[in-house]
Image (cartoon, rainbow, N blue to C red; front, side, top):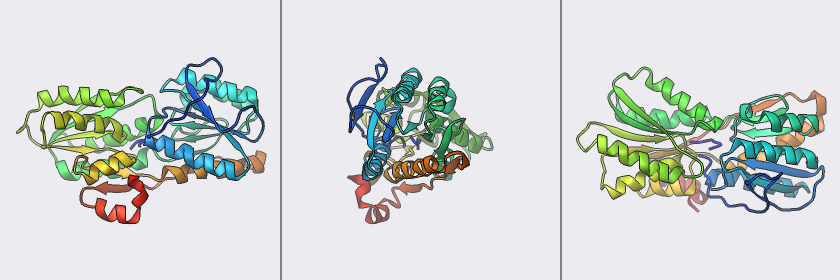
Length: 324
């Protein structure tokens, strides 16, 4: 949550102005008007901390290069995302970023961007026609989280997986979980898909129902989120029921999640440097603009850091700002 999930993301984040193109999505910007040196960002949610970090990093890099930035929060709605991208294309902005929406759900928007000859970069949205770069923060970020879960639970147990299939990042991460569990027939998985907005409430709701079916003494139990915010919602249910027998996992490494690991509430998460990713998206897309027709689309792989109850102290000594 490029994300995202794990970040998660992740992402924490509030940005407001006017809706683009008649959409109900919320938008904010560092400048008004249009022009070739404007970066237009469409995010799947502005309430996830990691999405906010990506936006912050992209803004900082853009402003340093003399660009202005406009942001639209599409609130998990692909129609609003397409509307925002079409509006950016009409305004002839210099580049467009898609945060988390799969490119397969942005056909109308991407067609408008291609027609206007505006390069698009995606954060966990995948590659497509007109996309000059994407990040690899989907599946790779899931691997440390899934591996930690399986190492702890072994060959038998029960897992509640909190998913989100509207976002490409979560689709990819769920695929990694499925692949790993295919060789573990003794692990029973219950899947529930959360909404954006509403992921915290959904996480708590699904956890309550799952806990009712899996009381203490039911064997090894774990809750896994394709990013950690739904898991944080589930943790509120665990606390309310005074359940300490359930392991909890997330992805993205938001400050709330890292603090939850430090406090012993979240078993582990996978941290990503969203701010650096946002800056990299801008500099890479700027390179694509300069290269023109000679540019070859790129996937920028992202390495995650597993932050667990065993490693959080060392992690925070190296990344003290991760919990701020």
